[in-house]
Length: 79
Image 1 (cartoon, rainbow, N blue to C red):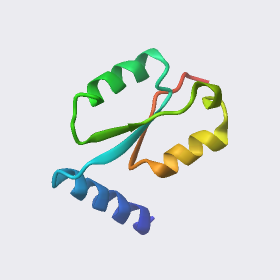
Image 2: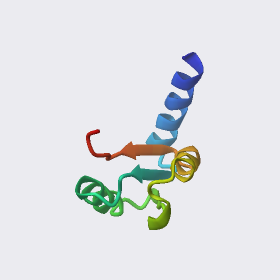
Image 3: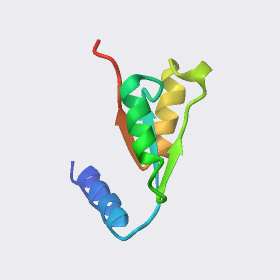
Image 4: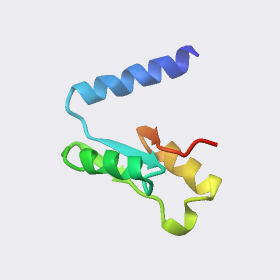
């Protein structure tokens, strides 16, 4: 939709102007998620959002972190 496109453009604009942003990696405990997280930790403008191990499989907890983040990266296994 036009609204979601505008939101994405606004967030990209913030990134380009050196603003900090929050990233949640859904699947951070997996091999790919661990590699992505390690690379992102090197960036001073990135604040990583983490999910408690006990809540990794709970959809509501994951969705809340997705809402709280500026960017969500999905590193999930094939179904």
